[in-house]
Image (cartoon, rainbow, N blue to C red; front, side, top):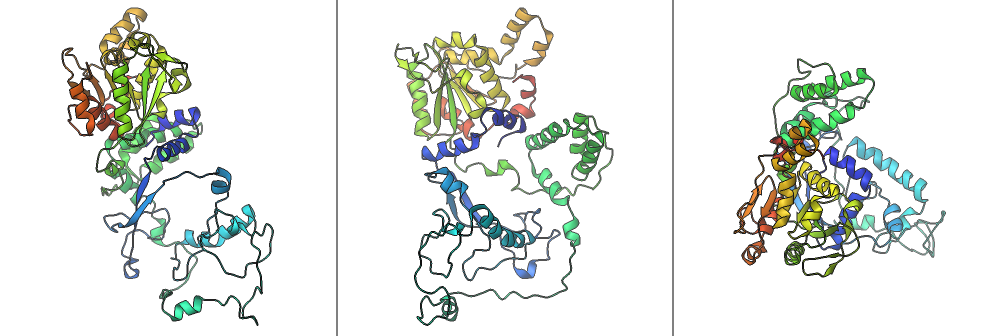
Length: 497
């Protein structure tokens, strides 16, 4: 999930972020997959709900209509050629096999009519013969002629014909019982009106908002406030705030406070208080912690710990993550053993926004990293976006230095600005302090250790909450996606990023 401020940054820094992320996951073997489920309502129960089940703006709450799992969708390869396989792909909802019918969904009915027209206009009358659109099995029909016809056909193009060529098999299939059409019962009066249920717009909006976690509700408020704040026409702002009172009064009041609107005093529509356990993204965490396809930035400079770096990188690769080495420059840097290592990118050529977490190994390079404003920004930005941060050895000191009151004091001495003191009061963060121990300290998904020992490495073979290994703890927090407690506990609001 991308919160609004992170999405705004990424859209400018790398508009192809999602496409690259998907391709990287597939090529690394961490195939994206989804449970494929359907929801079914018997005809007899069509009118048993307080919403119109055919209204495309409504969902069917899973508590009322449970999902039926019928399989899994897996993306296991990328296209060979983007234009021919992606730009030219064409869909038509009216193209169904015999025996499959259409519901009365007005949106579907409109698409049944328009999609065929759309593809003819976009790709020509023979769009279904393009390699990406044509069926895998041979097709026998009487389609002929038209611009860009691909197939060469012989014989007549009609039935019946005197050669008895290409007889239709649909009726034969039906008579043999292979295909049946659903005998839908029709009754009632046909009128061009919207039903009363179609006119109800806020109950499910309330259901959605009520079902969110506190940090998700705040994200909604932040996103709406951001957009409304740019409006110069205050009458539109007032109308939107009035609309929001139909969803949740507290939400509307917070948005009004943010954008300078009139503070509403009463709800436009009483909130019914209902919730669904399936509408928050927190309900869809993996059953087993995993960091497959997660992109991890490893920050290095001349003199980084060679052994620790290789151990971390190996642990990430073993769990199918995607480690990316970010250096003080893209030309080779030297590790603690004096060997040259080629970074994938450099700090000025990328940002933390494109990564799920950052890691800082120990070593002499920490001194130069601490003097780099861009490195400081990388760490603060990752912290502000609630991403996991890991550091051990001397690498721990740079994180502690940047996110603690000691750095605040240093800035005060240098700049003498009281604002800095208010900007970094992060005394709630804890770091590893015992120099004689490899014990791991976890604090708001900031994972630190004084050293990375063999015993710690042994504990990194699995990803578990509370494990003793440094990388195991780091990977567990990465698997949780974000540490939203930083937001709810007020730490993020104290960091400039």
